[in-house]
Length: 173
Image (cartoon, rainbow, N blue to C red; front, side, top):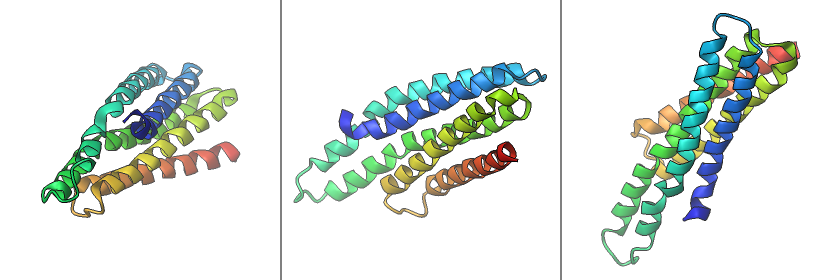
């Protein structure tokens, strides 16, 4: 199961790295909001590292359900339930990545020009983790369009990507 869960653990670790970059940019911010942004980056990094550990075991019930004999009439329902439950972990990663993209963009507003690259990198990493995690939510839910987590994950990823596009154009301009 460690091999199967490494994808999401890696995405959570990507969020932790994004938080570290956002914190670096915030430390060179002299505005009134700098301390709050530093604190938020640190909290998100801590949360992302917790998600690494949570994710290491989140998919185990799915793997167990997949081991049920194909002839078992409850197999399909147990797999669907296990995947629906497993969708919670990548949704948390999508949310964290999206929040990091937004935080990095906020840090970029008042940081040293020398740290704009770090802020942009943090936003891109957060948005990338959010997008990948949202795709895994979609896969885990098996196209259950009525599940609100599906649209929530997609919205989080889209918001993060919009933040990155805006920040990238500000940095380039």
